[in-house]
Image 1 (cartoon, rainbow, N blue to C red):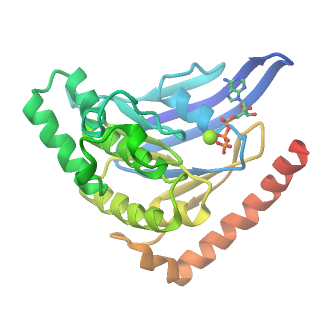
Image 2: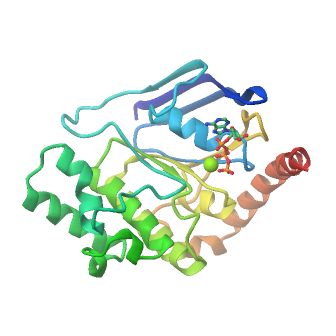
Length: 260
Ligand SMILES: Nc1ncnc2c1ncn2[C@@H]1O[C@H](COP(=O)(O)OP(=O)(O)OP(=O)(O)O)[C@@H](O)[C@H]1O
Ligand SMILES: [Mg+2]
């Protein structure tokens, strides 16, 4: 396995009306090609900030971030599924999913075929010609997931992609994402609030401290793949989620104390 992402000593200071605010602080992360890494940390600890820096949408104030390109000419280096679904309201569902492919000059027939296939995988085949205002929040989030997957980037950066979904849809899509990952073995950085989700999906769980975020702990998820929701009943799963919670609890309390 080769290293795909290197983030070293990354810091981010935002200018705010109250002066400079450190959002991220000496944060390190290394991700191997084909690895599924989950990042968990209390609200406001800088997870989305870090993902935006990885995606090149924001510049770090200190440290270095590199995504090493592979041998995939024409394919995007990374694609982000944002915490707040970001889709074009004036485009239909299928045109939203096909948008990145259109930008890459892929023929109309091919891009609509690809988009249709991904829409079916996320359970939206019937809604291809709807507009975003005609579908629910959870469905919009599925559109942004389908769009990122259709683009087939080298690295998939996902910021709480299932966060806005109801519990049942979330469970269905967790299994679907697991299946898709088994097929593609894409390098994924996946942010979630849910410890259960991080252990279900990830090869590794990286825990961040409360604001300003830095590395707190790291957990290897030694649960065999392919995985389904059934692994949540296993002893390894329960023990690991408990250990992560023990470590995260202090940080959550600290984050809540600061907000009061
Ligand atoms: N553009 C910005 N300007 C100023 N401050 C910002 C900006 N974006 C984020 N912040 C601040 O940086 C800190 C980290 O924010 P970030 O959105 O990265 O947290 P998060 O870990 O993703 O939180 P959540 O789990 O609630 O999504 C917060 O205190 C936030 O207020
Ligand atoms: Mg966030």
